Image (cartoon, rainbow over all chains, first blue to last red; front, side, top):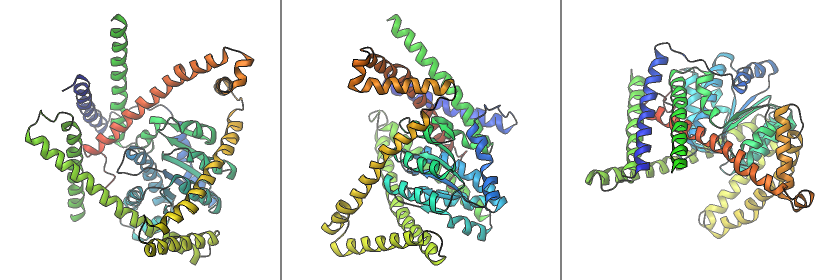
Length: 247
Length: 217
């Protein structure tokens, strides 16, 4: 057993313990104060805008699926979908949801079904707006660009795993005059988001969607555990730097 | 009642499968520490991962059905863009026919479609990226506040430092460019990656302990 692996195991177990601790604390009423993230604030008004203008709201879950290394990013996009689907259950305006990976399509349909409870008609209407476009980045980008243009989308949200193809879609949204929020975890794609989106979710901010939009105890608790772990890791790095400097 | 049992069952399956695959990751790092138990975990982990591949293949089939359904509905309701939906469905059927009659995805006919239709189209489409980057940069380089001022300043230094002209303008420019890329940029990227890693672990753990269940309705 190497030292690095032992440390990783200890940190993982510590993370699990913190997760249980903070989720428990949130469940008994210790709700944390969260810093303001303007993208989530803007997102809250998007469904209202779609209702007022009668034009659709588009959510892109990106290139990722739920059976590979992009799963966390896709689940972050699905947290946004959960929120939009809950709003749709009230307003009756269903978001258009697109994705490149068919496994993400199945989970997205499941999220819509959950939001509409047992209402079969509304669930079917919501399903009609779920679009699997294509697994290749260029084909997916072309499909989304066409969707933004042909469907005359009012508001565009892109949260998930994206590569260079993001800019093709982001620029299409800019040219269309669409209100646009973008977020991903890949540092190479972040400049494209910064340059094209009105509101941005940079890096780990996308994982906070469930905590900010729905105030779910599990998400709030994990956000607190994440922050605590960040301090611990930063401390370990600092101690490592000092020890290395002292020889 | 049956729905509740279904939810509980799905949660139990998800937790057990998740823990087994995670255990496989750790056990394979220490093969001699767990004796015969490690082999059982390894075999089970590999089996579960191969099942995931079958699920993905089936999901692809459902995605295919979704494409047909969306575009067929569009054609029937005569929505804007009907012509594109028609072309898409025709291309889909055409590619399927070529695939079936020429002997599968690795056949000569299918390769022709990929090499002479799909790949040139993808390459052409991605070539647009250069123009889009220029347009996005033009918009992003407008100085509105202190943040955008530093954004533009660093971008100009890096741009000039990358091209041969930069060294003639000021010999120190490539050195400053390297410092910007290797110190503040790298520090920022590492900070983002650290946060992303913690966020990814937190997302995985939430599912592993059953606190987050995107697989149930």
